[in-house]
Length: 196
Image (cartoon, rainbow, N blue to C red):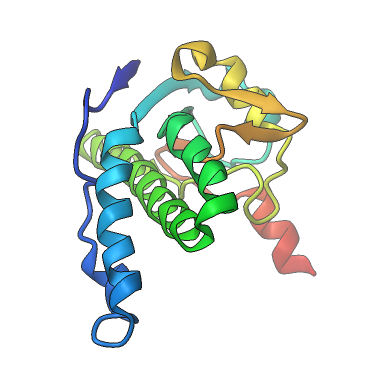
């Protein structure tokens, strides 16, 4: 299921104050830049997400790493390319603004991913099932190459997602893998890490 979360300009769905706290009362120019970039992020971002729930048997490569998985959710969320492009433009003329806008985008896309995972966990719980943590290619021992497997099962073109090698584009995007089942075990990647 693919859907855009909003259309047109919007406010980022999180308060700016936690990001400002190190600078309030000490760096007024940086505080002002945060406010400006926060508003700009709302104009540039086009948040979208898609998720697909598949029987674990259809994803044997993942099922082998996710003990107890009966279903596996593959998901992706993105802010689109415009915010990232503006960050690149700012780096030449205002590197502080570039870093701030990039930080705001990172916080936003992580929030989208967390919300997607929380919604899935709530649905699984209501059905008497467990949901695993949100496993993300490139985080921990989950290989970046799994981005391709996730995108192959989603409408990547509609989301505007692509790969450069194993790297996901645009950068303000996240893919995830979540196991669903009655009695989930620890992922094989976690068990391998414990053995080290």
